[in-house]
Length: 98
Image (cartoon, rainbow, N blue to C red):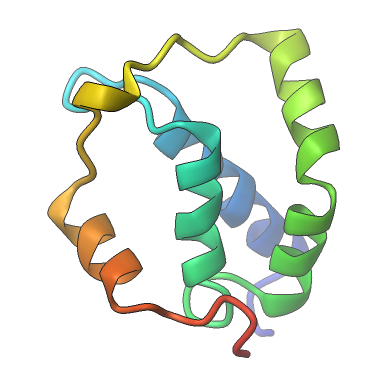
């Protein structure tokens, strides 16, 4: 809570943008996988209350994001998670845990 709320908000949406956007060093993650990663960091990297809001309003957030730029087509058959993200998702971190 020592981090200003605006910084905590930006942390979530910036992470989602970074995960779901193609970069020179990685492919874009599908929005649902990016959401799962954010959910797994609830209470660790991200403010629990703001993470819950992001999850609750995720469909509206996607609609807004699509008005400013579309998601690139992702071939899910050849998609690969980073090892860090595999480890987090494999650990079965309960997204509802605080």
